[in-house]
Image (tube, rainbow over the protein chains, first blue to last red):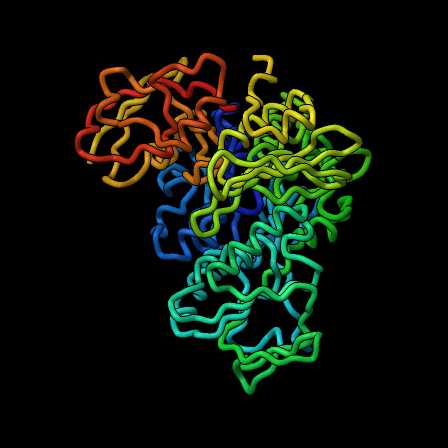
Length: 410
Length: 107
């Protein structure tokens, strides 16, 4: 037996942001361990956020999306198995079965399976040609040329992905309609002032927003041609993008009997219910405020990936989420610090220049989140205040002349 | 093309070749400079790519724009005058030989 075969083997399934953060940290902590990365897309791990922004616009080349160049994985001694999916885990034997029939043994397993876009059921026309989702690079690669020939675009769902795509495709002689079944766009993720701001922004750019109106069905011969809406109206369409949220990828874990609770249930060390298996990123749910939440963000993917790597090396350090998010639409930069879930009050702080403002979220009189619109300094201050658990006085927040950074104890 | 040298804290110097137009954070990520993950993909959203530019290079790298400037003000106490966000510095020939210290800190 050669010494190499005695080395512990960690297999990482899923090849997104969380997986790459996990691998980079794992390799830094343990230069010797065998690491295998299995990803079901045939490309080197890449960033997803630009898919609905610069990549869709054609302003970022495909190799600009990569999280690491291919030779980095080779240089780090990481075995890549791309274009392969794991179909079953045998926890007793500590093996993973792949879709090509291969059986891969592991000492430790890391599940970084991500999330999948929710799709429209085939019964309401979700399988017609011309209906797209946007999650993977291949989705963007299919969507971009299709948009070039589409003059009537319907976006189902007024969340971040839908609105970012609307910002990219509006103009150029196209009719762009965003349909949101909830009473307002960004209903799930932001308070009214932020929704109001983006509604006005999109209207100014010629996008038609239909709020409080749902989709009944899409119809057409082979290709989508019409949308039937819940107010009884019909809309002629050439292309439909469905952006109605994502669901965590949990089937592999659930079939193996791991605890699943709105995502693969992990603790603050990213441990699953099996001591040999960790999980990180969009596929997980984390403990929060006495319950569990899913955090679909780059920040969470990186932080959980690194936490999971530390756990695998026996250097456990608890992960306390410090969420931040961003969205770019037209020339507007939205930066979000904290988590607004469960807010009971908001306050708008006027910005320093036209078109800028920030929305401050409170829960039981404590600051929990800030939406900063074209206000990067305010975003940074908000982040610091939330992390330090400091809640500014209302009079200070509503006074644009008051320097909020004076509240931070450096 | 420009060659940029990093001196990560407690590590050996690293030299990375940068294609014109790509950002320093893209170069750092593709050469796996420790401590830099390019979290927001150069969207100027996270300030995790904070770096101190050697004084002699400030003319070549240029000064921060207003948004970058505002974020840098909040990155740490007593911000050094030579701090920049790597994601906002794009490679061009005049940056050949640039020396960067850091990563300074991830906020």
